[in-house]
Amino acid sequence: MLEMKEVYKTFGVQKALDGLTLRVPRGAVYGLVGPNGAGKTTAIRHLTGVYRADSGTVTLNGQPIDENLLAKEKICCVADEPFYFPGASLLDMKTYYSGIYPQFDEKRFRELQAVFTLPQKSPIRRFSKGMQKQAAFHLALSTQAQVLILDEPVDGLDPVMRRQVWSLILDDVARRETTVLVSSHNLRELEDICDHVGIMKAGKMLAERSLSDMQGSTVKLQMVGDAPEGLEILHKASSGRLNTYIVRGSIPQVQAAVERVNPAYFDILPLSLEEIFIYEVGGGSHETESILL
Image (cartoon, rainbow, N blue to C red; front, side, top):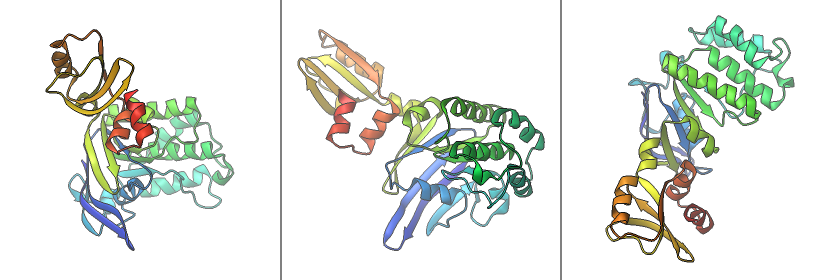
């Protein structure tokens, strides 16, 4: 398990992390989401051992990550802007990665050449942004790391390559129980690949559950007439005779309550991850209205 417990981090007068607690089960694909400035990148830098917490613990399988070579060699990160040594080629970086990851798989590296088809000896700095991201995944997936931490990982990749990259990652999750933490603003894409989600705001964790639990605990109810008594109504909007409610509860619970009042029309829909995110972080009136209507 990858875990942060009651982590605080301050830069000058700015509190970047405010008692953040985060748990990523082994073999999970965990989506870390939040508005700009929520502290996601700061959290990632703690999980990769770049930052040291002011207080709190950051661990992998119960062992501290900070100043722990054995823990760090199990973690590989693909950052929003991948780092390469000046003038280094893909082969140069392969030599570097194989030196710091004992489990680096040369055979896997050769197999992935058929997927990424990148020049092996040309300086990576001459690659396009998308090609540099491909190089980062080529190297990261060859490390055979136990944990992959991805920060806006597929930004700059074309749709075909995005699909191929996610397919490779999910295959590693299925075969090797690779643990994946991914931070991205593309919530529609995360919804397709994640089984756990953490929503951050202002350095704190607002909600952290499996995606199925998160989507199953709040629903959108559309009906003609007023909602029955006893339901926990979070928001309401109206358009003509049709009322739309955000209701706390599962679809069977809400359906049973609505059927008792026998409305002329009703429909109950699960919320998307994007809708859950907007509600949880307290979006403005326009964003909240988009959830309801």
